[in-house]
Image 1: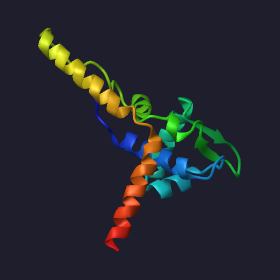
Image 2 (image 1 turned 120 degrees about the horizontal axis):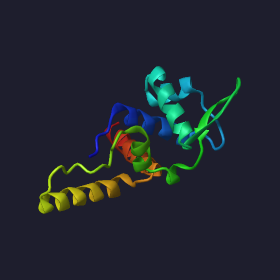
Image 3 (image 1 turned 90 degrees about the vertical axis):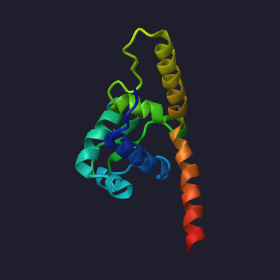
Length: 137
């Protein structure tokens, strides 16, 4: 069923940074890697795949880089997982037992609902983090 690799974690971090950038601005891979605290060499592969799947666009040249192809509210965690993870939401039940088949189907549907969360929700988590940081000062 679902497994989240480091690749997906890094992709979400990069998309968050791109989403927080000024509208229509592009970020270089090096800048995204620094902001997201992600290894640049690994990030290059991830960004290329996200570009290939239409999540990102790139601009070539000295002032080039990457930007979101659509708004964070239109990108779900499920979409990123489906792009980067193999068989993330596949059927895991390998039995003919009808009760187990129903159980695993129900679990898959529940997980998919959770993963349908748009990445724009990250803004709410940033606000929570800011409140926590301010509380501890």
